[in-house]
Image 1: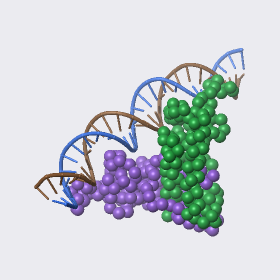
Image 2: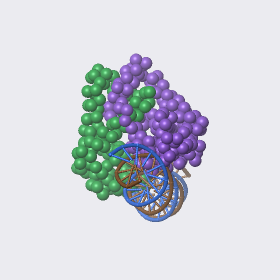
Image 3: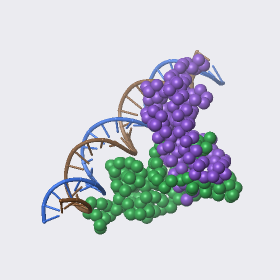
Image 4: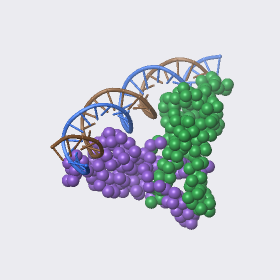
Length: 141
Length: 141
DNA sequence: ACTATATAGTCAGTCTTCTTGTCCATCGTG
DNA sequence: CACGATGGACAAGAAGACTGACTATATAGT
């Protein structure tokens, strides 16, 4: 069944990223943090932006941010254009973790590439890219 | 990036299944319950089997089973071959829910099939099936 | 047959994560 | 400048998972 295959592949990827991060010394982050990093390292983001991006309440996002603040993955700076807002900024460690996650994800993808032929891998990748919608990445099932 | 596409596609699928289930009247189940149903409707299963399958403790699995018992999705019967064990059995409603989930999943897959050409869809599906490992389906990220 | 160990299930307590509800300070628009 | 909207914080609580401890039954080794 196609649906089950998608879920198994996604499971494999998420597990692979977690494992790769742990092996690289980042054992205090969960998958949802990776999604948060992706948002923060892109356009400037606030806690409320993060909440919208992850599909959780801003209070939950604030807890998540606290967690990452305490562990030194990010800092907060006053937004020069909005006195209420505080911009989330990745620290060196935060950037290192983001990089590590990308590498771990790439490791898994490379394994797939070797299991399939380069030809078939490209076909699969193109198909996935075509049906992937740019919406939120569900942090939890 | 391939990895992100996989996660987005999986998110789309899980959300689609949840939505399809709710539309069919099953609004008191979560994705993890679908994984539980899949296990129960296959080989005979006990709570402990379920725990192993889902990668959670047997206490957590017992809570999940309680939830489904209370809502009439399954019943428990004494295992004739093991006085300690109780076999989980899907009720009519449980089977209906399983069917509904399969249909909802299929709806999403059909949308993909229409977005891609039948040719490209088949390529993607085959690639996914080839790299999907038969291990557990991670119920939570 | 007896003992030791493993396993199915339950009870109790705790932790983490996310929720709702409420509030204040600040922003932006009429 | 008043007013609704928004970013963020505080508090309380629900859900779901965890650890630890216990009973009853099964199974393997002697």
